[in-house]
Length: 175
Ligand SMILES: Cc1cc2nc3c(=O)[nH]c(=O)nc-3n(C[C@H](O)[C@H](O)[C@H](O)COP(=O)(O)O)c2cc1C
Image 1 (tube, rainbow, N blue to C red):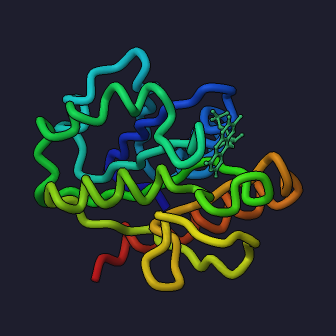
Image 2: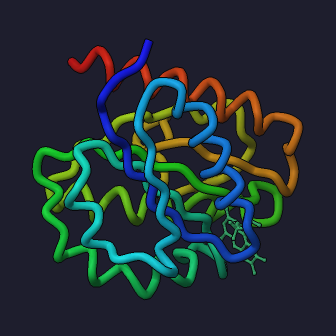
């Protein structure tokens, strides 16, 4: 099964974990969708305007903050028209060293983009993780896919594969 739907993946990364996740997501989705991937360090955020389906990737750094390239890009997000766009989120964190701010960056970006009209898809259950608090939580769910390669590398491939299957279903059978 292939689809003409184009998906734009926009990610930031400091120590390459989120870049590797983005690569793996691309590998999982490219048999079905047309994928374009952008490291926001060297891309223009306005490229987001070319896509209806967008994946945003951001690890959490410096105790509850966005990764540094997203920190720079954050004010520019206001210039993007997210109305009518479907947005899913993924990113890396460390639940054992930073249990009070686990995956915060995902929640910070989701809140802003939702306020600009973006419609979130690809939310996940949080019960497979061990942490105290997170801005990425909405009720009991995370706003997107959390990956913890610092502690649970063995779960990463399965988490990415299952999430890609989930978002594929959500894209192809919209509510
Ligand atoms: C100084 C420092 C602060 C961090 N702060 C957080 C944090 O607040 N929350 C979290 O979930 N992970 C935190 N992490 C873990 C990183 O998000 C994790 O190592 C991630 O894999 C880095 O992703 P990247 O390689 O894509 O930059 C921190 C790591 C470092 C070194």
